[in-house]
Length: 88
Image 1 (cartoon, rainbow, N blue to C red):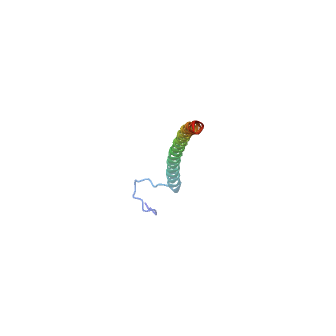
Image 2: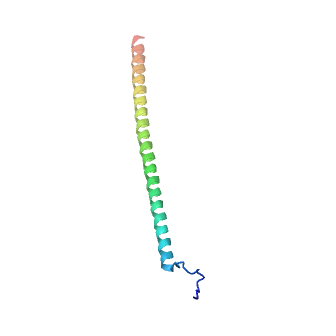
Image 3: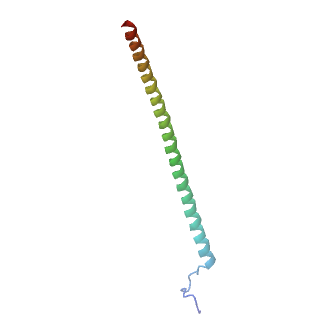
């Protein structure tokens, strides 16, 4: 028997089509894994943005409360000053 592809007798030679199919399968597998990782990354980024937005809303609420409290103090001081001016 004359083998031009150096395949030992009794072993099946793998055709280029099978190699191409294997490479295609590996490429599809890697692509799918990459898409999955991209989805996880996008989910994490979205969660961070939502948390940041929630914190911003809380900070704005805290600042509003502080401003309201300061305004009340200013109003009280203004009334006290007015009372002192009327008393003199």
